[in-house]
Length: 432
Image (cartoon, rainbow, N blue to C red):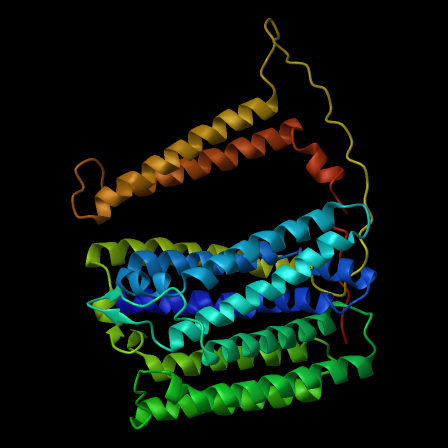
């Protein structure tokens, strides 16, 4: 059963990525049609959480590689080109976003790079999805197709459909976070994108049986009931989004679009389980050994709550409507003389670097020893020893940072950066 836990982690991570990074990719694409001031504003809104949003695709890749290596060995070679294109676009998108945010004012080149790379990443993701759904050519658990097998009519339609979904999520997010759109403009744009998304969903759904080599079993009662429940829930959420665009509360369209997206992904999983790579490669066939599954489920499963907590913290910190940040200069650190100075004492920064380097080495050692534990050998150390070692390293890190904070080494973080990195830059306002 552990292989199904790994598969569930892959699906959950991909769903979180599509829901969270989908809206900021949509905002990036919408910035291409906006004016200079709007482009900078959209970039600042996305900059509050884009790195946390993209963490989910990293988790999905790790679980797929370690938990379902058979699927990874077939899927990656079949979509190498669009996948590499997506990664390059994500890198360029982050570059454009951060450089634009660091610039003193609007920079057209960086803003266009952010928007264009958002569009390129979305198109590549749609091509990857279409290439997977149409079934890679495989034999004996290995990919036997060509470099361009992913390029077909259905994958192009998937790319267009994903662009529509992300644009819709971006428009719903902008209604919640900005003031600039009039109610009529929000209503017109949101409803138009919702109609396009609904049409693309119907077209892709009708063409899926002919494009997908896997024979879906909707004749099975339980599978059919779950699938049609997701369809009904998606339609209901779409109706809520249609009504909510241009009306208060401003968060309602985004919540409805998120529900629609989640229902679509869940419906796709319902009609395909237990097949993970069409047409015949199942979860059980693609899974890694039991010891690897145990190590993966525990390791990644324990990381996910922290990533989710970071997402929630970022959303809570930057809730409300966007306002232009007020930047303040960073004051110099206070000079402190060592009370027992016979020789010059190392700086607080140097001590921090040395201590954290040692803690990182300790963490790597703990990870290496934990492989020995979960591999069933446990010659050097047991599970309790791994727990004690990791907990000691974490406690040393926290205690050391608290001591440096009391000594004033982080005083600039508490004074000069306030208002620069979003603490005062985006003020929370109650939305009615």
